[in-house]
Image (cartoon, rainbow, N blue to C red):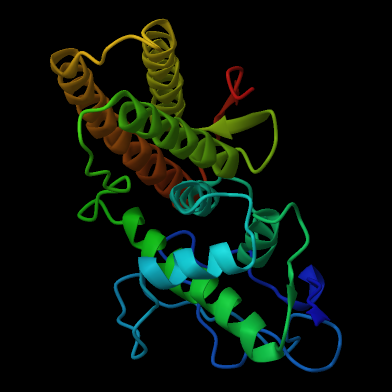
Length: 264
């Protein structure tokens, strides 16, 4: 087993994948020197519209890697947390540090360097770059799809996933802080996301009140329709926040200080 340690000073990536740029490197993400992240890596600025010659790993592969290394953050929340970090106004956000944060700040132990490179490559050069594309107004963000039968269990799962997606995005956007300086449209978007999160709580209350009673399929179907409408609004607001923060960062505009009071 090997433990991979991050060396932020050796990986100058404060602009990688942000401000219409993507994370890219030609060398293994982990070397055999014992220092962890390959010190030769210099993430190269690359047009967000550029095409990679290597096909990035898909959702199934990334889910399997997260499960294999017992990542405590579910895939759907990983996506939004990385997207929030991409949009984050802070200039010191580093993709590798964000990825380590999925495991509480310390990467898991790997059996080999190849295993470490597989995980970090899938998350950094795969998922991170895929999400960075949403800085383009023509590429709106979409939440994970949840096909489901109208049951109270599935309804509860859908509510939980959407809440975690919102919380993941805001955690990334705020860079783990209680307050962030956001441009006006992003400020509005986070406010709306907080309202959606609160409305999702009403769904949890409904499920709890009707627990043990015969399921009302008609009511569940209607509630799912409402959740789908809220999901569309959530997607719109997340993308609006990303575009607003990206534009503000490029233009060097100041932000409005905003607390995330409903995170806990």
